[in-house]
Image 1: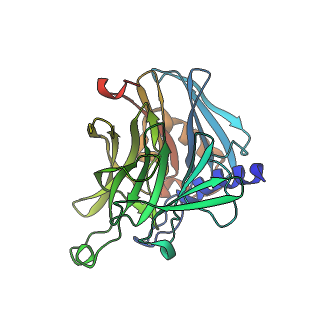
Image 2: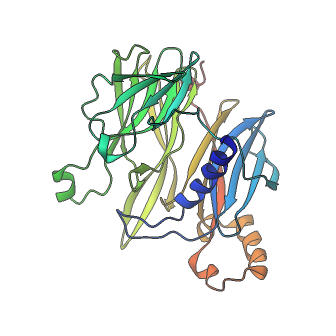
Length: 316
């Protein structure tokens, strides 16, 4: 069961990067998509795959971002991220103190009624998320000793739609383990595929939470995306959001990991936006590519960016 879910997790990440959109009628080009970034043996490891060939690979980089292995073939049945959940419980889930916490469902039928579910073996206890009247969809979750933190998006209000907004506001919410203490900080309007935010997992360094996400902006007659990295410590209230990329596309997948005070961000972009060595490798691959439309459609390739953490976020 777990191996099957692992395969579906990776293929789902690839499909997400190339699926038709509801908010914008658009289908991204085929190619690579990032499934997950991890830290293994003191190195960054980027798991990714190609939705045309259904092949899977991994990149290995050292803590300074130097490429050690560019494209190692990999079994697609990689470890499934997240704990197993009993039937009837869905949504982002994390393990904390031997318990499983599930935060609502990313579905319209529970919209406006976010809950935290404590799962102990087959018993499920539900708690309301206090102070969460503005939460619509729970997108990501992260648990630590002092705080359970979620990324949540609101609904688009009639006024938002009248003003031409495409994406809802997103915020980080932190709750004490008993569910009563609540703090929050706004991030911005995160781009989404259907109702799913184009954002990484929430990564914890001590009590600081780190997340990468995409927003969209209009550039003349076209739409482009910016890539952001946000850091927030609910204990101290310190929050910082920095732009780490621009002139990108938002219809992609993104993942992060932290090692030695640095964040590695991996995401997929059309090859003409990546350039450099990836462009040379892509041109070489075209010699055996059976689809003559692929160069014009701009196949997606995985790219990485290393960002140093500010000093305050390195304290654990």
